[in-house]
Image (tube, rainbow, N blue to C red; front, side, top):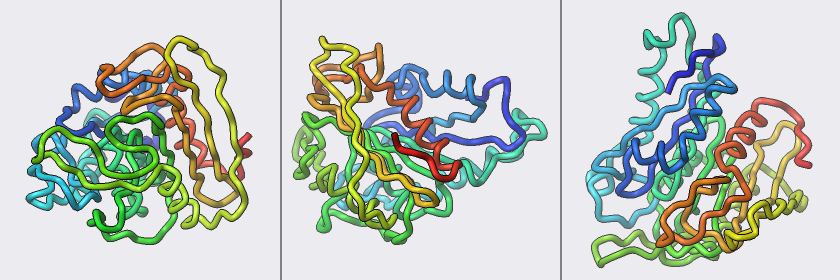
Length: 280
């Protein structure tokens, strides 16, 4: 999605679909919210399509084509952004290599975390929804050990990816994904890489929709010249993308309406381009 107004140096946001998903479905699952952001702030939004509707993320377990073939999805996403630079639709504008971001849901969130682990030179920040790092025995990535800004948005009643860690629930014996760490352990990993030792800033969002059965809270590690690490917890929320109006199917659990996930993600990314933001 290319809005009418863009800066000379163009930010790019990769928005990654979940397992068995499509680029088209990811647009509707996010209610086109990222495109509204692009119109307001000037950015190119890209919805890449995973091979056979999956991404080869950092989980070693998974019986799907992208995993079986060990596809280089990090290389694929690099190529997608490289192909944008010089696209006639951008005119004389160029992609800003320092403003490439990635956000994803479920399998797409896991793929965003792979970019954080393996391609810190490529992404200026990632946001993972309904995803956490795999456990050590389910880990297949070559982590760089370099800090990257990371935001996690997870529901603590997620029926598929357990907030407290453990085996990912799936349908059938051929759809296993192995175990993941807890949301807080995942945040601790990136917090430690960034060198934070103090307690995070904590915030409770207003309960804008008392009927949805969820409330939201946030933890932020942020000081000048260090990558920010955020955790937004949707208490009572499921394997869903928070949105003020749109709800995902109830089989995935409750959708929180208190936090506009797309707006929070974009603000998080933009903060990384500024120095010394106050988390309050």
